[in-house]
Length: 108
Image (cartoon, rainbow, N blue to C red; front, side, top):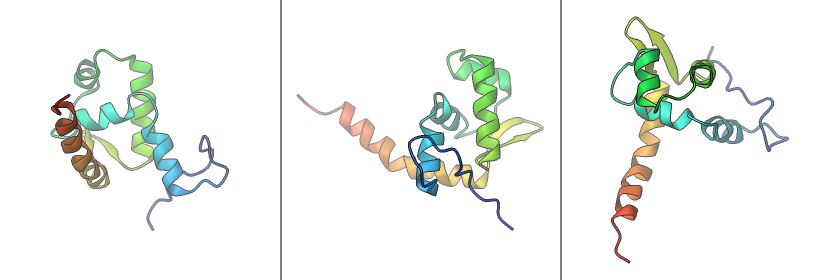
């Protein structure tokens, strides 16, 4: 049986709807950066911290725990990596990434 998404205690929502839970998780500091850095390869805690501009180890571990509980990240012998669900989530950002690249190159 699939795990239920963590929808209780979602900030800014009394309904606990899955989209609100997801947006709450993704809106937490360093969450998107962690997902971004894990997009191509597994990284150890140390390598991930370095990739995340020396973010606090405490906050990184908190976010990694949250992402693991949500099913987006797993810890392997090689370090942390995206799960299949995490890769699917990352792929949903690809169009936004392409848009951001075009947006930053726009004229005047």
